[in-house]
Image (cartoon, rainbow over all chains, first blue to last red; front, top):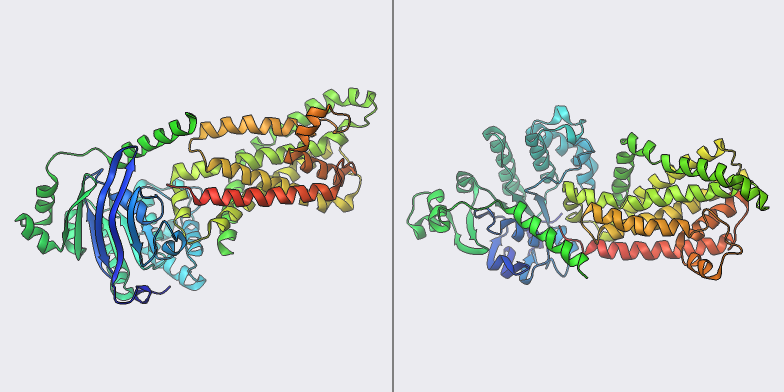
Length: 277
Length: 248
């Protein structure tokens, strides 16, 4: 797969979003946001629970149709040419997306085939990645026998199997021990450095964002409240760390858990729409 | 091409790893063979129809394929529930290829199920008239399987709760089964029933199977084949379109 050379000439913005909005039955999950991510950049997309992070990622990755606004992913619009967009990214989802009736190895192998990773590269990378997440010994076990943490590690290993232009990581390291987090971030940064993979990630660990992100955007209540480099953020808010800046910008109140509530609401809406006719 | 193979393989592995599913789905055809075969056999013979098991077996084979195939649509809903659907939806694979791979996988499973029922019916005294034509039976079994797998997947991509799916399925499958000529001959049916039956895809599947297995096709093998292949292609294309509209 090509990398930087796919980018439109004279323009090194690999992701560009303008006036993007997503409404679920009147509720604005994402409210008129605009931002850009440069090619080869590590970009952190931060915000409290329910701020609209995952909804935004779903729209960027062709899983959800925007209500309005424009997205360009390496020059392609997910609404117009979803197939071309899909050829440009890889993703580690926030919630589970493994086939539990397959073994760990099968999950990796099938992913590699779907993304057209050649056989030799596939075999070699599967071994390397499963070793990193310490699942190589368990490669032939069914995923349904795995603990939550093991599933999470497998999920990340699978997401790193092919090397896309843009890599989405939606809270990739949630619930992992510091050692594993460290190994995984080293691998991702290596990918970013040697292959020019653009990384777009969300996290609740502020020190993680502080350490790896080159640019940061903070979203709250569906709106982007600030974007820039770490230094710019700290300067704007007159704070000493990202954590302080984050709290200064988004307030101290605790938010409801995002995916559960929002998803449940959406399911209900669909259910009523489907049956009400 | 590889994507189709991988999606096909996945369906097969899931099937062979679920022994309860294999055995459980044989209960119904067994019951129908015993209850209807032995129950209606004497009356059917008295009415001059001959051996009812001979007539019934192809219908029951078709039935088992119909049920296995249509209910495989529920796997789409499971995939949504367990999250694997997202992995498929973001993959750089054309939606038609996804549809083909999934459909062929589940259809293969349904055909295997049909073959098991075929051997089961031999125990109850069913004898195909011409052994040479048996491979041809696989063709008709395959077409039935593809049509109803695609139908199940299509319906599953329109709704998102398993109860709703099961409800729609039983409202749909039962009429399709009972009005297909699986249990009774198409000759001398009342006009209205005959018209409805002739619009039912399964009718042509059952008829084709009967033609191959006991040389008793009502419409003729070529008509059966043509109707089935046209419907199969149509549903696949519609299914692929609706699948491409799916969101997660």
